[in-house]
Amino acid sequence: MGKEKAIRELEDLPGIGPTTAEKLKEAGYTDLEKIAVLAPHDLSEISGMSVDNAKKAIEAAKQATTLEYNTASKIYEDRKAIGRISTGCKDLDELLGGGIEAKSITEAYGKFASGKSQLSFQLSVNVQLPIGSGGLAGKALFVDTEGTFRPERIESIAKAAGLNPEEALNNIFVVRAENTSQQILTIERADKLIKENNIRLVVVDSMMSLFRSEFAGRGALGERQQKLNAHIHKLQKLADTHSLAVYITNQVMDNPAILFGDPTTPVGGNIIAHAATTRLYLRKSKEDKRIVRLVDSPNMPEGEAVMKITTNGISD
Image (cartoon, rainbow, N blue to C red; front, side, top):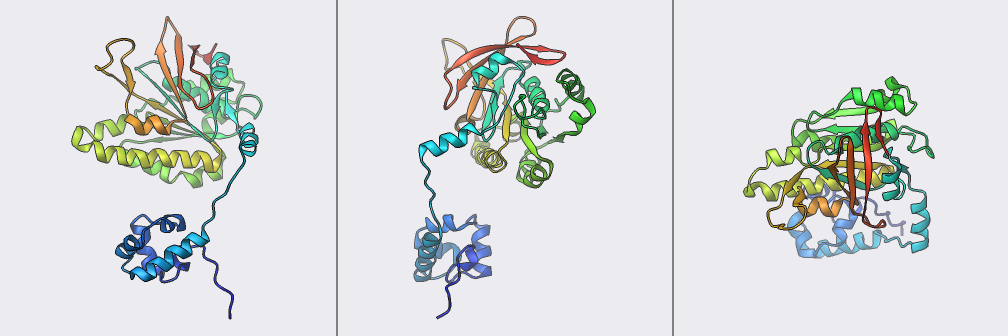
């Protein structure tokens, strides 16, 4: 008897040829893990194969997929190696446990002129600094959805950071997205750009602006949230795959249900709330000062820091 063929792709499963595999991929079943958890009748209905053949294909998919287990100590060691980008403000870095973390999504929300975009400019420069000096020795991809990107600010921040302004500008890849399709496609197609250019920071400023304008009204809410969910999960996948940091800015609204305290609420609902690893709430204070509140973090306590926005960027 010949050696059994190793199962690595959908086409390798018994009873599934190239045509059936293509049909499954079009339906969203792109890998063995998704086949392994299907019920035989569901696979039969999607693919057109018999229930018996579907059972064999599912069993083969289960045998071909493996689960990896790690100890908590191994995960802890891996986390120690995760890089961080300095915000330029020591108090804020301390609040965040060392800066904006790679392999995760950091969301900053607040009203107009609260400093969200200023922080995105600072991070786009600081990511270029050497590892150990507040950076990740990499470049940035900046998705601008509101036309707020200002190269002049990059120039002045880079000079203050001791970097060559022209080089700093060339190390930031800017995409001006004018609709949600462009915003989504930029992230969907980013893998090659990231790999070839050592991009270690992805900025989306702002995340929800185009989604809010294109999907207005309750009738469009379901479709909006579905697209938003896929979009933000792709951002997390980029962060994990390429060990980069994702920084997104978000708009706010006043929640009339909150009678006492600050009624300011970030838009995007539970999808953004659950997807963002770290959430920051920025608000204006006196003159050029901004108060940054750490609202949510898996490993740092809630707290506040004061940062200053100057011509040279963000400082204590």
